[in-house]
Image (cartoon, rainbow, N blue to C red; front, side):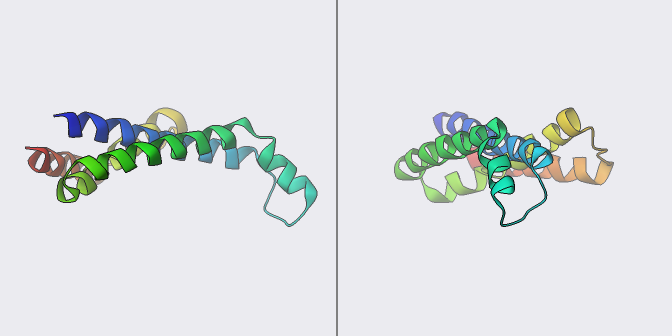
Length: 116
C-alpha cells in the first residue's frame, strides 16, 4: 500500500509537470536562438513550476526505487497516463473516445494486479 500511494503522488507530479509544460509552451514565442525566445522561456512561471514538479517527482522516484522492488515500482509509473488523460479533458478540453478510455482502464487494471 505505501508503494501505491507514493506511485500515485509521483505520477501526479509527472502529469502536473507535463500540464504546466504545455501551458508554458503555449505562452512562449516560436523556437529560435534569439534573446527574446529565451527570455520568454525563463520569464514564464509555468515553465519554472514544471521544473519543480519534475524535480520533486525525480526525488520521490529515487526513494521509491531504492526502497521497493523495481518490478513493482516501474510499471506503476504508467498511472501518469491516467492522470494525463484526465488533465487533457479538464485543462485542455480535448475529446477522449471510448478506445482511449479502454486503454486507461487496462492501465489501471494492470497497476491493480502489480500492486497486489
